[in-house]
Image (tube, rainbow, N blue to C red; front, side):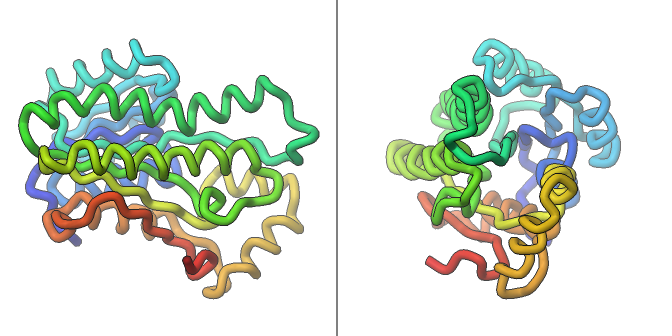
Length: 248
């Protein structure tokens, strides 16, 4: 386990799935963790698993006021935020021609605007202190496209471009900004997709050279590395954790 020097980490969408795994791994690595989620009950359960130095924070990443309030609450309870993990995400798989503008707006608001809101809220403090780590969870869909996920792929690609730009802008303040792109991962969301479309789920598994889905812990391991001191000279990078599904 990579140690991260007892930082304060703010993880969005941490009530389940990949976000839960990230929060637990960061706590195990010695961090205090703010488990931020819309689902208050799930957030409290994960915070309890993380230990006494972690707290549950209600946050709607699509609302800048909610994000600022969540950041203020976290810093009051735990101290200045050293690590931001932009994990909150949402998708609805359907052909683009069958999608609606309402769905587009929701996908973009959660997956892209949410990253902008959270990053804008934590960066001033990081710049003032001259340190910080930001990792945003994108998707391999952003790198190669994915049928049925046109707007999701577009939003996640925006996360990559945004992160590279921010990495350049804040490097002089010793702030690292990187992206992790999971491939198909065994989460509740994937199980929902699989139950609705078993053929798609099977096809995704077969497409992965390792022949299986990723586990949430395997995505979390990459995040913990990127916020650790071992990754102090890594910034502006995009790392696929996909069992070889994407090799670019």
